[in-house]
Length: 253
Image 1 (cartoon, one colour):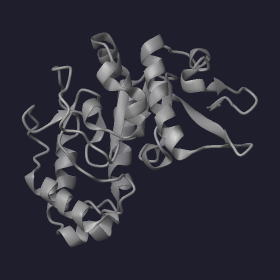
Image 2: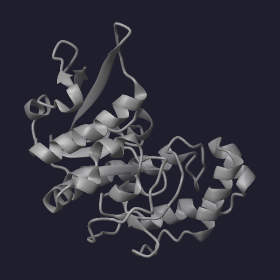
Image 3: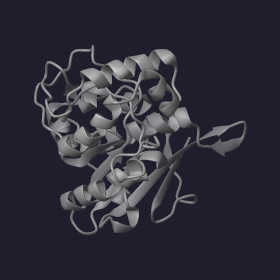
Image 4: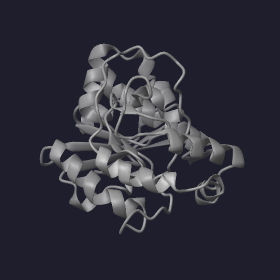
């Protein structure tokens, strides 16, 4: 079974990493093409493109100018699983994974990225901000989806066996960077819902954390089947068969 998750806007390049082993990501040439486009953009252009504050635009202009996506070292980069710092990664809690769990994550987990394409957990990455939905033309591609979709779909297919489970824990924005119809995997998409004011709702903050919790559950239990995934119970969630389908697993609390 493979799993895909989204990156996070928040990054942490300060906390010491607990695991020295690292790897190199697969799309350095493609990433460099995008990075070259980003380096040409001034802070005010980044602000308009990404709808961010002037301070964030300046920070990311500085990141863009100082970054070399083809020369990752432990001095200027860190492993992706320890670099991202949003709700998904809070749920995953990578800093408490054992070495065996990290190596299983390396084999099973992929992080979709607007700049780096597809990251393995131990792939080195440098700080960046580039949402997959950003309308940035790159060469002949009208946007990042057009640029990445064939590359990422082929990469995942190369890594999977026919009919293997692909656990989609990414947001719609990021999973749209894959051509689902061309994937040779059986795609399973969990949904996480909470009761609020007497109604069952998907609350973004909790759903994001739950996606990370599901990754952690797979690594903790070595789940490999849909039936095993249905046993997910972290932080009070429980599988609801009445709301689920063959391709959608719904968990409620």
